[in-house]
Image 1 (tube, helix red, strand yellow):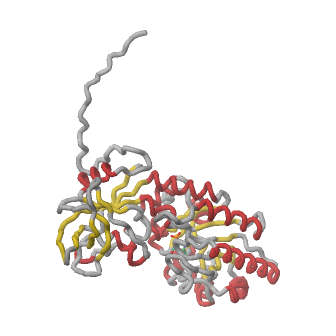
Image 2: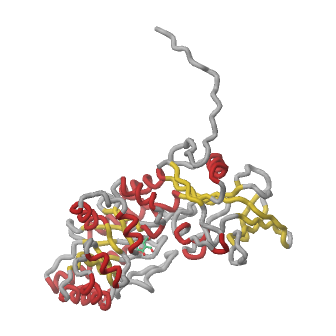
Image 3: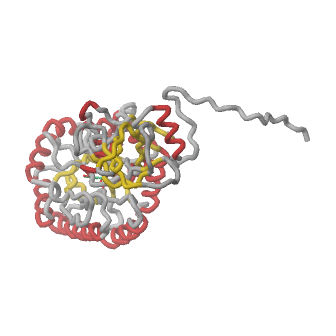
Length: 408
Ligand SMILES: Cc1ncc(COP(=O)(O)O)c(C=O)c1O
């Protein structure tokens, strides 16, 4: 056997410069040291999107709900690279505005018109029940599925987007969900059948029924009740009109494990699969619009301590990201993102963490357990991918955190 000479001298790795990607240490899991390296390379604050985690989440959802077509709710995080990654693995999309529609459309722009049309029909739903006339006019030529929930919307769709396929959104219990949606959207179940008949009589085609149980829904009863309500509406429509409703859209709401104690998608999926099988015909197309579930745990923020004070004996840290920026989900999405230190061990103290703006409202927490931090130290928050960067502002002249993609 011939021996191959091996150079045992370790070569020093050159630090990548500028925006060149750092080597990823462990596919799918962002290591602390790696986050610090990214902050050193890109500056801070950074909003790190792990594309391997996006793919894992999509496949996990599909694994547990194999008969459900997954429409990513773009509103949760409309970063075009997220949409691209999900597009590449076959995801469908729920859009709520023309700009969101165009983010998805960019991925199919190169296709022949016929294939574009097939994609839009099969894989996009415009799931905002209220659509401006200009939007309806723009959408009409693409013939997408659109949701509606009231009489006035039927008139608008009839006049400006008669080629769209319709999906009636109904109001269902949102009990206990973190973000309640039923006070703003959804036809009362008692008027659902009449609205569907009115749409048919206006010359439109109603393809489906949809609901949303509220975002971050940990009360699985909401889904069970919604399915029951939807099934009886569909049966009554068929009985009264002889027409078939082909699509059932079970919306979003799929909970993320922000903390232990939140039941897994497996438990929810088992219940959903059983009830769907019991209540609906085999050929019913079931679709879902998960937003948070696909993106929340795929993103991490790294920010820097830029100021420090002790007020009434309590350490107060001022970091360069806050409630007007990546932490905006604390306001709009009612989620707290614990602020964590990279320092290992040592004593911790209850500390306040504030964002960089001049507003006292820009308070991330008054009760973080943190070791003694110095100006220039970094902190991080995990599970911050949903409804966070999407609602970041430029308040006080501070721009949103720089987005850094890993594992693309
Ligand atoms: C119509 C619709 N579909 C889907 C979603 C996504 O919900 P979630 O992020 O809870 O999955 C939302 C969120 O507001 C929504 O309004």
